[in-house]
Length: 253
Image 1 (cartoon, one colour):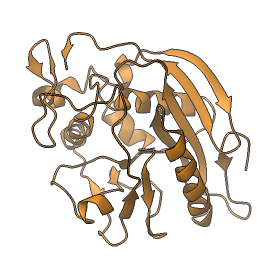
Image 2 (spheres, helix red, strand yellow; image 1 turned 90 degrees about the vertical axis):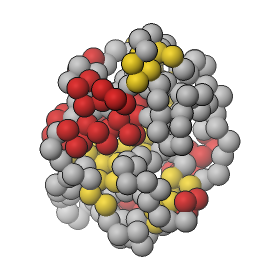
Image 3 (tube, helix red, strand yellow; image 1 turned 180 degrees about the vertical axis):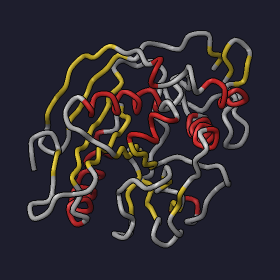
Image 4 (cartoon, helix red, strand yellow; image 1 turned 30 degrees about the vertical axis):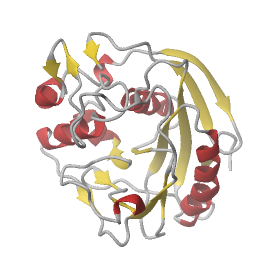
């Protein structure tokens, strides 16, 4: 394994070059568990992959989706990745048949979580671990940059996929069984007080973000991404990128 958490099979050339992007802040204990489980898992699958942990500097509200957009940009500076898997740091696959690969459609890889009794919680759920080819991710313009705090960005991403004329691909629930590491919500990543059930209703200038998700995807995402690069640290098992992503503007939280 190369310094920075990049590994590829010795006896074959992998068809996909996979960047695994993890949005991160103050989750060191979970990261250790994730790395301990995931490197053997990915090596058994003969994957050509790199691990990118994108850490938000400071203690302002967390923006998971913006960090994943940044991970996409920063990973491409190092290697010609053509598949991107965006993963929370607390989700571990339980079945080796759950291939960490991209497909002909964006793929939902963590829809059968143990904490939800291994069932899809609601039909439009598209979070936890999702996979996009480079072309698919460009087609939806990445994630929205506007969701601060917990919730909503996954529902927004689902709408982008559908608007772009693609479908969500899911393996059967047995293969897609995943374990969620128990934890308390991080400071700075609290629930939006206006949330209803699992659908985030953050607003910008009084307008609910999700209501205009399809229209906003063309101007809010990779093409509007702004951040300040602070530094990169090459660890044995992963690459950590530290960034300043600013703060929310005109968003009621």
